[in-house]
Image 1 (spheres, one colour):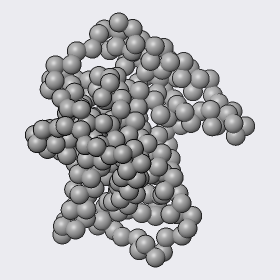
Image 2 (cartoon, helix red, strand yellow):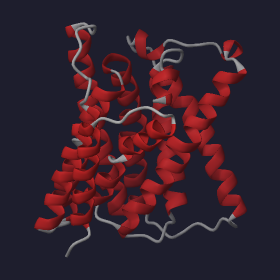
Image 3 (cartoon, rainbow, N blue to C red):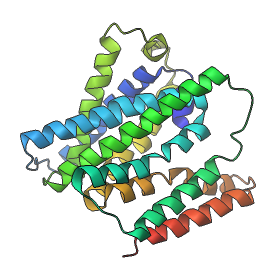
Image 4 (cartoon, rainbow, N blue to C red):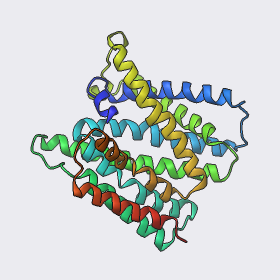
Length: 279
């Protein structure tokens, strides 16, 4: 939601570059406080991890921010629910990661529950059809890139003793590098590459960007890498996809009414999550 607001002022590539810089600085500070000692990873593993960052963060996040501008948050998040089954399928193909029938049923129920909640109120006629179609392709691209990035990251984490913080830093740095390269190259992408001068940023805008980066990128990627280190890619991606459900308690705290549809979706997702942990 916050990134949607920021996207009204900052173009996708510039937003990805800025949040990448801030998140990298946060990770470096955290690693220094922890007494940083690099884990052991092969050169090939390092390349795969960097490529996962290019896919999932550099290209995936830019596509996600662009989809937000075309589709709005609900439709974009609806497309993002495709990432968990894609991730589970890719993990099976690339690393032979098999999930039980219970886990597959859990993924299906969880994603259906999330989709049921966030699809409420998405039907409107205000959006231009060409913009919706363009947003659909950006959103689908974001889901594919993020699922692929997660599986490649899982491959390296299984075969090294890198910490989740270290893998987060490598992925973010690679993602930042490709985003910066896309921004510097003379590509005909005016809507992606438009620049908002930093001098025009208000203190409130910087604060909003810092908060969004802290929770959405710094903590988000750190926790994602932790989950990918210990859980199959499909399950980790499914749990990450439940983030829209956490908006509901905030809505209740603000005194707003929650629909029975939303509550039903939450219940369905909880049932799905419980199946993920059955053997």
